[in-house]
Image 1 (cartoon, rainbow, N blue to C red):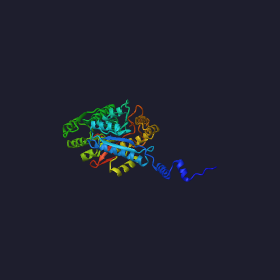
Image 2 (cartoon, one colour; image 1 turned 120 degrees about the vertical axis):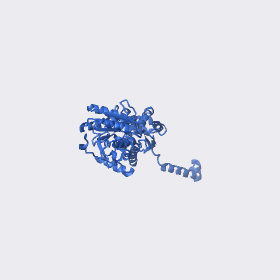
Image 3 (cartoon, rainbow, N blue to C red; image 1 turned 90 degrees about the vertical axis):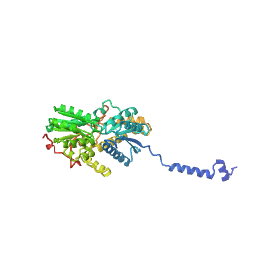
Image 4 (cartoon, helix red, strand yellow; image 1 turned 45 degrees about the vertical axis):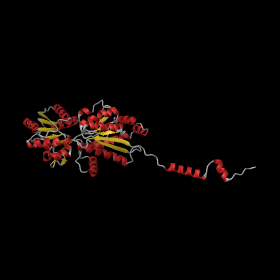
Length: 411
């Protein structure tokens, strides 16, 4: 005999009511329609001077970095991850800068720190990078001792003072100068630049006939400039920051030092040239950005459209190049694997290791065929060859133009 069961009996036997069945269906539909959780962003920290004595360098480096990361995010990020830029203003204060670097490493869980234009704050972040084992990309801070073969976690993208010095010494020897004088400020950049240039000139059998150091906050530079005048140099080389550099140039004009002048990369800053005005005209500057390169011109067209008009200098370019290098490193399998696994310590180690393999990274610094060269014992990426062009100040300090080196001769 076959047993007949009613629909109600079946429902009771299975233990499911119509309401329960509908609820289960609704829950399954919700699970299927909930979007997958977005991959955690990759944190890149910028720690630099954006309101202190070297603010212009820090601002432009930060803006160049912004451009690089924004381009990556607009293209979808890297490996499903967006890039998050966390920025701190170190105000040219080494202690404050070091504190922000620690915050980036510990609180923000940053993968890399990018920044460091003034040398003293840049140096303050090196112990933090070493202790926290977080990669640190130094930008334009040029003091030679910042990067050595034993460096573990920090890398430099800007030129070193010894490279500026070699470029200047090569130029002066080529142009026939025999009696150079040097004037520099009292901060590490100025002192180290003067030392490096004296050594580079000595290799060319050119002796420095006078060298003067002034306090960066001094308002009267006439004693130092008078000493230069009395030495009768045929060229003067200046290693300043922005405001004090303008005072040097104006004082030299007032005291009738009418010889060719070379100013370090500081004269690439609008602030120095605007403060100096006509006293900066004719000054020659070593620059690692060749404005005749089409890719450099394209960069500044985009940069100027976003941030306002700028002369073609190394400061935004170094930030952009460092950002692009960081993006290339992040995209390597070992770094992405560690990031996806949530292992920040391993991701930082893999990032450092991948940076050491950037043996021919092509950026916007240098001549057209030049490239950065990093390695296990080479954490300073700027090469010694094909990296510099010279540029001249014109139009009351408002423009940087190609110089006529035929006229840059001893008087």
